[in-house]
Image 1 (cartoon, rainbow, N blue to C red):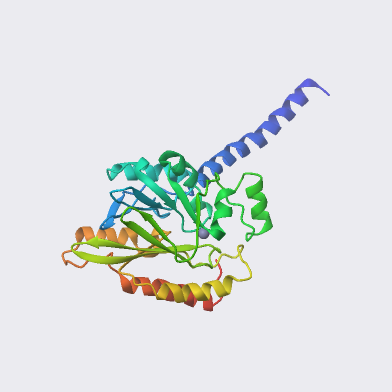
Image 2: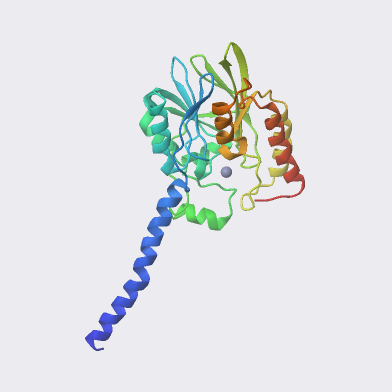
Length: 292
Ligand SMILES: [Zn+2]
């Protein structure tokens, strides 16, 4: 074959491959943080702070004997969470316990890095523990997705699970105490957390509610029964302040702006009606057979 033809072939192959490699690299980088942007951290109420990205949430509950951090975001949002903790004047090394709402990459992806930086012990529900410890390998997800986890395209850095809790267990760091409610449906081990905070001489009940969204590719036989139970359990929890793992669901920014500019003394984060609406809306979607 003439030399110039071979050269042309090499050139054509390069023209085809190089943009693909660049695009793949960009996609990998974007998927590492799921398009999330840094968001200003702020105090929600009492010793309860928002330290997550613009939508994928993370929460810090501080105490004199150490802090508790709920959720790690994507692998690429862990540095944002650490920057937010520092900006609030706290030390990541004082985080003693790491918790997780559910083990998808957008909430468990950053746990390994946060665990390394803090030295904290990671607590997970029985059903979430194996998924977190394997970096996202979940027997309930469809095979093509599992395959992407196995070959390292999906999934996230595996974190060490130090303690497996059961429904109703309480996690304590000094006076800070959070109670676990396993509210399955979005995933089997989806965990909601309840804890009290003191704000202006009053005790407020906080609920950090797990997702109630039914994902099409992530079904398991008991999913419907789990959701029915979760609606019941969540309705039974007293909630003055409520949050969830995606900030848009509970109006992080809207409430933050409303509090910043409001003339009335009412605190927009005290929102029991919004909490009831969250559960009602999720249940209505479930009854309609809505799958995302
Ligand atoms: Zn999820």
